[in-house]
Length: 493
Image 1 (cartoon, one colour):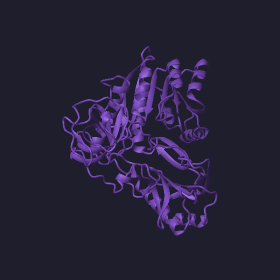
Image 2 (spheres, rainbow, N blue to C red):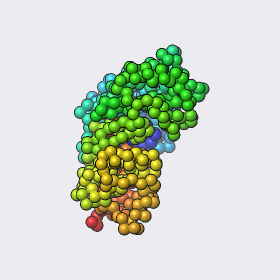
Image 3 (cartoon, rainbow, N blue to C red):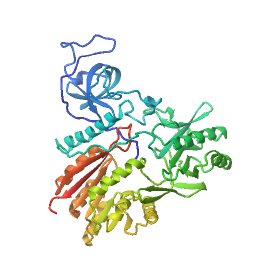
Image 4 (cartoon, rainbow, N blue to C red):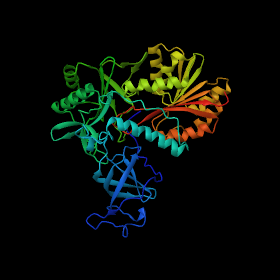
């Protein structure tokens, strides 16, 4: 799953003490007699003092002022902070951190020099041990609120020994600062491009490639795309490293068919970056947040990048999805395999199968695997990956799981195990109902959003299933993201 997440402000009701006093900037401090009667009396620009209770789903600190949730970026649990209110909504407020009056013992100086402006990470100001505890609490709070579980069966989170340099892929936008070509991300809420070519969570090989390609584009005076004027050619650098081979797959996203001085650019990249084995061009003329367009052309080198996870082999086209943290992916998929509890006799259905990674991980332990995916290109990749891995018992189908699954059941093809790995919005209700009708003995749910996971789990609990355990996995250290696997069993089996 990717690292872009939509804001989903937490509107929980308060716990703990009454709020502290506050003051308006430049005015007198509120006393016990003149402080606002309710949180709704506050307005943008008022200053408040808040004790932070926990970390929210987007990495912000969550405190309470007069029994209303307050979200403050850059704060940590147990801290007492002064903050200026920026927005007042019926169920929550947001505020900007002004001063930390009492710091958490887990606060640290972020190692990244552009941490405050980049926005790609949210928790570098927090020690890694504290990050792991905060993510466990995120899962616990989600199941408490949305599934009504005060003591959910949550296992200790699976973290990393080295929570840096783990990302095997980068997608960096291009721009110019004077004569220099810059590759990076836009600072949140702005059009300012932040240079992150030395990013501490990227594989160092990725940083070398993006930095060198940006330099070469500048030296050859190849026009980079300007999002405001919509002029220029090269929009984005996408680089992916094969962790087993060390090979680099490089894709240039362009807004025009032709790259000026293309042959010389390809030659310079080959000369300066011998680890690059693919140089591709993807055409995307659209003014949209999507990185890739529909047409990809290999300018030089291999059509695909070979990669492995455990004993499973993958052959990745430039647009193919592959997990961004292979080390943690093995832990995640091992948890899936444990929850599936395969004996070699089961039919496994992998809904939302994507390029087939989970299904192929389970295939050696199952009688048959059937994957379902809506995107035809992903199914083509899944079939190619099955052939590369010799998984003759794995088949992949284009369609919607909520349609294909009932059709199979009507024909007497009833799954023993169903695995779902939906997008951040969770499973659609028709699929949850189709799962209840199919009645697999075991359900395995992989989720990148604890809130939607807990909501869907509650539905399944009402459809004849019990929850065995919840396994959080830290797929993206230094960010607020947390992945989970849950294992469920049908009660009447």
